[in-house]
Image 1 (cartoon, rainbow, N blue to C red):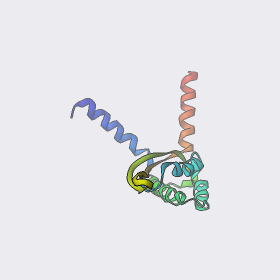
Image 2 (cartoon, rainbow, N blue to C red; image 1 turned 90 degrees about the vertical axis):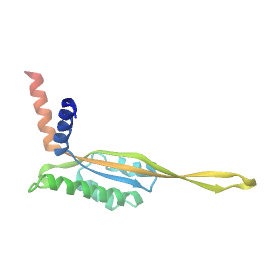
Image 3 (cartoon, one colour; image 1 turned 90 degrees about the horizontal axis):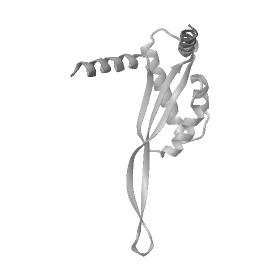
Amino acid sequence: MGSRKHISAEKRKEERKTKYFARLRNVPTSPRKMRLVADMVRGKDVEEALAMLQHTSKEAAGRVYKLLRSAIANWEVKNEGARIEDNQLYIKEIMVDSGRMLKRIQPAPQGRAHRIRKRSNHVTLVLGNRVEAEVVVEENENAKSE
């Protein structure tokens, strides 16, 4: 591996140490239905989002709830001894992308056939820390004023 690639790989590796995320792949729900739930919790605090997902009647809410719990567990592994309440965790990003599509055929009148697309999706959830975000914003403002 070249030195430039090595340096950028090390940089990405360092960034991943401070990024807390979880992925859910090949969920057999259409992306459109999953986005309704994702839009509902985007930007919310973790405790508030968990409560919303628990009391939502949509089927996709259970999957996002489990994904959020996984992201919180990932955060706890990287920050041993830290409390969630003190760090003000929130859902920084939640992305729903289209996954693979199973193509099926439905018989139609007069020998025709209609195609049925059974869609799936991939969900990526990234947690952020409001305390760290405020510190970074203050540092940027101090650098601009100098």
